[in-house]
Structures are given as structure tokens and as C-alpha cells.
Image (cartoon, rainbow, N blue to C red; front, top):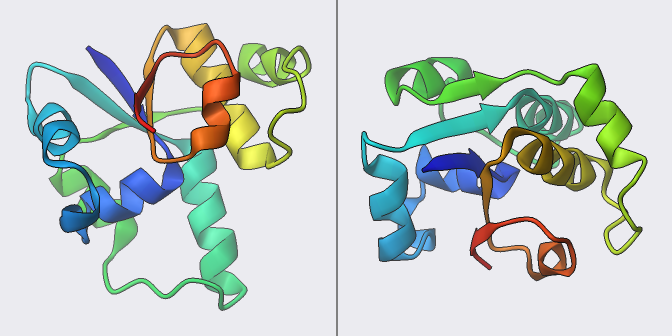
Length: 125
């Protein structure tokens, strides 16, 4: 299974794992699954940290490396796919994650119920 973590799932999986349902946590930790963090999530975390909206107790990049999560870059195809999405969700970071999951054939790991409005495989919400 190929999983793409939503930004909150990235933060919770690297720190506050109790916020992730046990069954979802098992799939994230299962080495047979390919688990990715989008560059857009790292960007969102950095923006919120710089704006004082989020405090991190960890070295995010080192933690991602230590947990062996893959980094999914943003491609032109991902950007183009966002233009075809309906506007059920206006958050540009979430729209990019949806587009990336669709283009890459991934399951999006998220607690965000708004993402259910899209035809994207979702785990958890």
C-alpha cells in the first residue's frame, strides 16, 4: 500500500501517536507499506512554525529521516491536477495533497472529513 500522510498525520505520527487510530498507526508503521510525506506538508509546517501558529518539539527533517518516511516532491503534473479539482476544500495545501494522491495512486491518510468529497482513496477520516 502507498500512503500519503496529511500534514496533521505527519505531526502526529512523529510525536503525538495517540491521536492516530491504532489500526491506522499499524499501517503507517508496517514496513511493507510505502509511506510518504509531501513537500507541501513540510512547507505548511514551516510556514505555521514561522508565523508562531505551531510549536515543534522535534527536528522535523531528522525525524522524517529517522522514521524512514519518503519525501514526495511537487511536480507540474500535481499542480495541473489541482486545477481540475472541485472547490469542496479551499485549503491549498490540502488540495495539493489530494492532487498528489490522485496522480500517484496513493491513499491519503487524514482525519479531515472534507476530503471525503473527492474521489481519492482515504484512510481514517
